[in-house]
Length: 262
Image 1 (cartoon, helix red, strand yellow):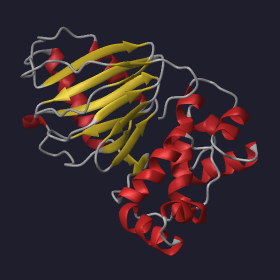
Image 2: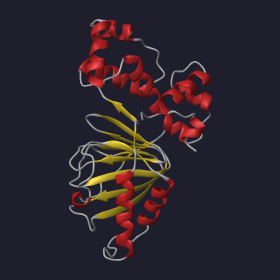
Image 3: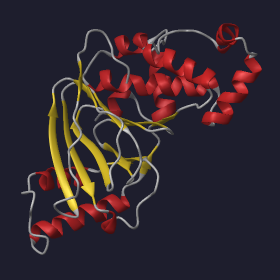
Image 4: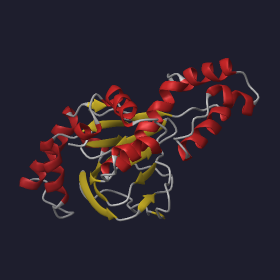
């Protein structure tokens, strides 16, 4: 989610909690500007979710992107940064490890069903110190049950570790529309195209072409979520036509842009 145009990016503070007031704790936050946090970690699980706007969680492994109807599961102890697009309404959940023994130990993007979305909305309106043994506590348990059943979705860009590939990543992250080929990069970096291709496959599990397409499509999600014209988004991501962009989008996400945000 690189900065675009003259959007203002603000530094967002990390909640200064040493412990959770309840095993399941909800936090709401309105973020009018593009925002990011410092790299940090928690001794508890975090579910980063927004009812509007697009979130991106970056770890040493990759970038996990969550438009509405998706959320990012961040295990305890995983260092991460959180990026958010303008006009984001966050509804994050912090979960004590004692209530998430069933959970994955790696970051992942989860699908948020209509039911889970409304449960999170309702839970976020509860007082901080709700009665664990009352109806509010039972609501928290239903939220946990729904999270345990939430399917994983592939909205992650694996990040390369090789310093030469990191240079390519930084350049494309800032300007995903550029048409620089792997051959062009091999000349700039003084390494063969075959070596770069092999390194991409080793570090990301993807070919350079597939990896760049995923980067472009994920970078398009904030603009699409804010209602920008598909044609403008397509050109801004480096596609020569709207149809080429929609075809690539459908291939990656099994839906058109309109269907994806419905």
